[in-house]
Amino acid sequence: MTRTGYSGKPLYLKLGIKETHRTLLINPPDEYMDWLEIPFKVTKPSPGELADVIHIFSKEEKLLKESLTKYLPLLQQDGMIWVSWPKKASKVETDITEDTVRKNVFPLGLVDIKVCSVSEVWSGLKVVIRKENRK
Image (cartoon, rainbow, N blue to C red; front, side):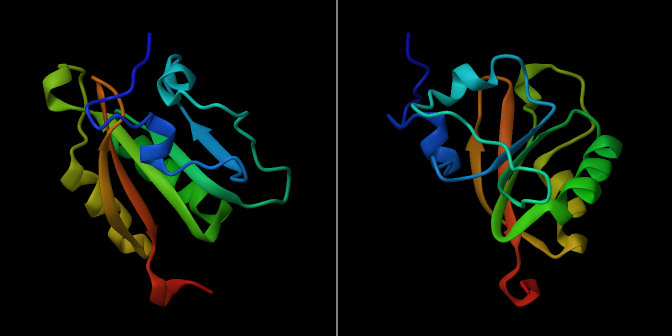
């Protein structure tokens, strides 16, 4: 059974993941790969190689901050980070909201450019390095 949402697009397309991308997944739910409906293998960066996509899942702001600090240096300058947190309607205990994510990414020189429903439980905010901060 397909999980394609109301838009008719599989999740991997909504997230902008391409076959050529090197992708880091941080604390993804067990079902994540099923949600993606991806027709190709997700490739991790090799040691010393930067990621095109980093997808961080977090229920706690403290862990989100730690993940952003740890993984941001591993991102290509034109890459993207998706930050996902439990939706309020999911009733999953969390101290993260969309505003919490913004509060934590803006000081790092990141800007949000898209929001997406990742699943019935998880929301996602796409952030990128501000153009003026790219090397």
